[in-house]
Image (cartoon, rainbow, N blue to C red):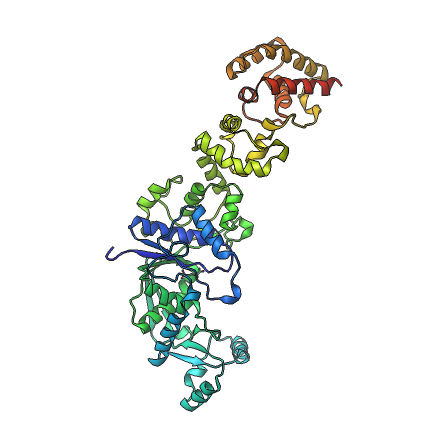
Length: 486
Ligand code: GLU
């Protein structure tokens, strides 16, 4: 690549970023890292009416949580600031003024009423919607009067009314638009703020952005931007429009598909590494089959020729699966650390604080089954409870009588009294006893599992007993016995 790669993520702080926005951020970041370039974050806060308090922090915190670091932008600074568009107004005004002076833009005084009427008429006549260029045709005198009166106005770009605008898109190949179908769009609004079009072109130029990689929904803005670059005399950056993201039902991604804000994924127990791996597959692939890839591998191979045109399908089930894969790769220490805040939130407060050493012994028992960290409290609570609460009727396994169950528990107690509390010893001792009692393992261990954990699914019984320890196991067997014989 000839000059330095400089790419940007340019979110509008009109809400918390969801997976689609962050996928865009991530592709830009990967592209920059792959080419040894710069990744810039720029806040596009020009739509003052739609700003959402806290959104900027939500966006930046989300990136930080995912370990997507930026070289320039809010919180880090840089040579091309401000990185907030609302702090760059004089620059946009100067560009608009220049375009007016050279005849590529004009002030438009049309009232809201006129524009509404125009739209209704176009709808009635089944015409293409868009501004009709009325103010472009104002006479000099008329224009001067309106200016002197200080009539409210916007600045519009004067689109060529013939010819075509062509884009060689890095992902979508050649795309072209008939200029006559693109109307004279607004550059500066009456509140003095630029529209997205003017701000994005000005900033991408002044911030020396080399590649614009953004969601496909922006493709229709590209002819406007390219015409603006031409009129301003700037070389446009390369463009690549990333494929859409759809839900498994092929409908536009929405909250219903689990597309919540990025920090919600954190709170829902997803790991940043798993989420990054999952997100990169929304449009990019290494080789059409590899799914689990570490970030170093992804960075090393991330090129745009492996970004597809077809829409990517967002499947939250796959994300959970992938999260499980990443959980299984963690060390017990790291997993215990990651789980701790979820236990602090999810366990009954009377069970807190959690003993770290005890947790370290529990973690390997749940690591296989755990998919999201939020499942942890429910999976481990019986390790911490004094006595798990359950319906004693569950102790009696299908095909067993109450008496047989009582007898099994009564025999288990002395058998465990002197038994070494190690998985293997426990297993040998209890299997022997089961045979003696002529109970199938399903029945005997089913009863014991209920007695020890208060549930019918748990990690392997003997490992669980070892971690629970002698005191808890004996106390729970006694409790079970009292329930049945009481
Ligand atoms: N501010 C736009 C957005 O919110 C950025 C579009 C672009 O990258 O050009 O997505």
